[in-house]
Amino acid sequence: MRATLLASIAVASGTLLLSACSAEESHTQCTSAPQSEWMDQAEFQQGLEEQGYKINEFKVTEGQCYEIYGFNADDQKVEIYFNPVDGSIVKQEME
Amino acid sequence: MQIWDIGIRLFHWSIALAFVLNYFLLEPGETAHQIAGYYAFAWLIFRVVWGFLGPQRARFSDFFPTPSRIKTHITQLKQRQLPRDAGHNPLGGVVILLMMVLLAYQATTGFMLEEVDAFYGSSMLEDLHELGAHTLFALVCLHIVAVIFVQWWGRIQLMRPMITGRRD
Image 1 (cartoon, rainbow over the protein chains, first blue to last red):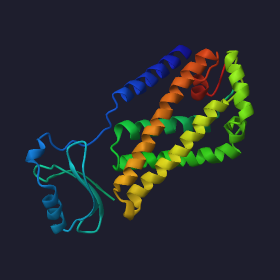
Image 2 (cartoon, rainbow over the protein chains, first blue to last red; image 1 turned 45 degrees about the vertical axis):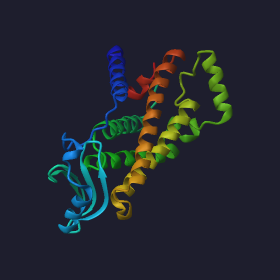
Image 3 (cartoon, rainbow over the protein chains, first blue to last red; image 1 turned 30 degrees about the vertical axis):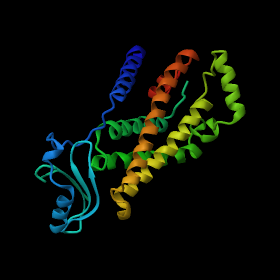
Image 4 (cartoon, each protein chain N blue to C red; image 1 turned 120 degrees about the vertical axis):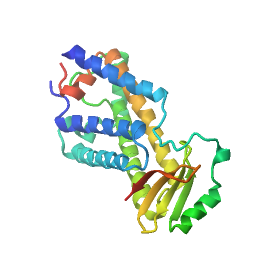
């Protein structure tokens, strides 16, 4: 009982430490296309604003996404990850 | 003998679970990440209350790191003889208090990022939240290494009481 217990803890902490060494925080991946194929950032944002979005923050993420924090046309709080090549929504968080 | 009550143990493993989820698995900003954050924060509140009203070893007064306690602890470490009936040692107490402050900080910055419109998605706040997470992770690593080392060096069971509650 004791040995099993300690062994499982050892494995658990080992896994934690290992995953830490190769720490790759999980993130949404949107494209693998080179940046030269991406839409222009300013034009992309302007297009969203024309659709009624209000953009608080615009970011280019580690996972090669255009990401916005803001409000949609219905004034709902949204966080959206876009594919920067075609502007399609990859992931959306809504309150 | 009984060392840790069920409240302390559930707190410990709940926080550990929430940390692993939010640091390694769940994407910042997503609903599940927020739920794990609130879950951890609720347990933090419980722990603070327990730190005043809980059983002896759960209380802040039991492990608050005073200079004289730290001195005694270091002497015991040199002799490789730690008291078997003790709860947190005072150096552990330092790390515990730091981790609790950081958890509160993570909860606050995370809440502001999501729920205060003026800070929604704020890059500055996001960086601060991320820095807090990395600092917390550094403390988690220190905690794990210290537990394994002190358990061996000090000839005392540390992991078992946090699981079963009891030390032989």
